[in-house]
Image 1: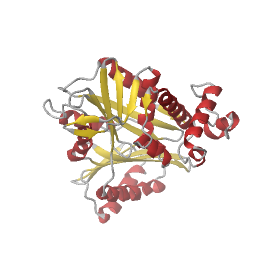
Image 2 (image 1 turned 180 degrees about the vertical axis):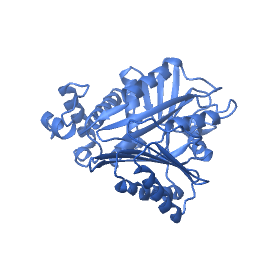
Image 3 (image 1 turned 30 degrees about the horizontal axis):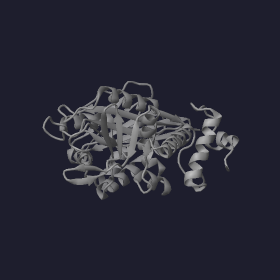
Image 4 (image 1 turned 120 degrees about the horizontal axis):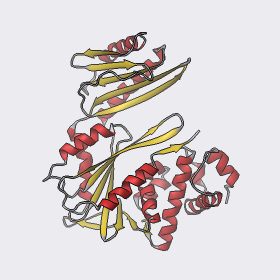
Length: 356
């Protein structure tokens, strides 16, 4: 074993507390290194602290249970491919969720073969909870060429924080997703002018294009106005004795959320099923979950028992996860109440991970 406890504590845990003993953490690193080799740790470029140490502990759990036969982990499945491809973060939720239910003495399978409408499908997880076999499918928001254009706009607008001269919150709500270069400069200029005004809060409405809100840190946000579910870019600038928070929102259409929900086609129609929608690339959990609640009509998408919306955000010293559960009003088979409670407990336990 090339990693000692001292090295784990200094380089990986960074002196932060972890809910495992020294021996448990050291064993987890040994098990993962034995399975995936020294490159797993040597090539890791992500967040450290409790985030990676607890994730390694969860990965150790599923590897050990796979050896015992309590967890089926395909050697060429998505979880293993992501790990071996240096994309551990893409399987974080599935690894942690599987480990959580394995510790609860449930039998869990990764990518089991199920028959859906006469075809062989492979949902991400299947969990035996009591007498029920519950399938879980995770879907992640993907970026199209149009979204890439939007993010280039976001990146440019993020530079405005360099021109702010006082601690401030700035919210820019775009009212359309077709944005022209000539409009961006005007919007940035107006937003900076508003943010640098001594008297706060302020708001500015540019008809048919944008609504800008500014308010001081600790100050009550101006009265909200009606907004649609949105993609959001958040930036934080700390320096020059000030702290500036910038949030840029852009409309999120119904069609995009429907594409995410369409992943439920991987799930068997007769069983209780859970869909997890990862909006970490962008998206507001509360607004999108409200939209999904409107789209989950009593006679549509009935193979979905419920939907979990989640979004991870990287702060100055922590990785936090916001989540929201929406139940289908008339599922083919509802999710057991105990299972829903367990999933809620799981996400609350993994709501924040610290790092330095």
